[in-house]
Length: 151
Image (cartoon, rainbow, N blue to C red):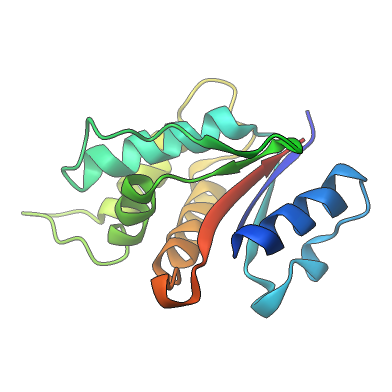
């Protein structure tokens, strides 16, 4: 299995980025404005959807549609993260829970515990933190969105 890259971009920039990645010439360093991207080895878009479900449940927004959607027929490897999932991921940074425990840590631990995950809870926490920060950086006024490219 290859890798999955999650990044912030406008629609046009996302298509351009996907074209570069589809050709196999993209690197994490050339991810566009601000370098806002997280590259995760060994997972697919399915695992990103799992993360969305776990985040939604953790911030009490379960049941929303967390299915990634095709962006353009030109690239079947580029998917858009739905607004409900973006909100749930961003909320992981600030969500307050009753009692003990950090909701982001809990989500990371649950995500790492999913079947066939290629990383442990410590690495998952880093990924979840980075993805949550990407989600929180979405700016409607700049017409940016969160995208997933999966090899």
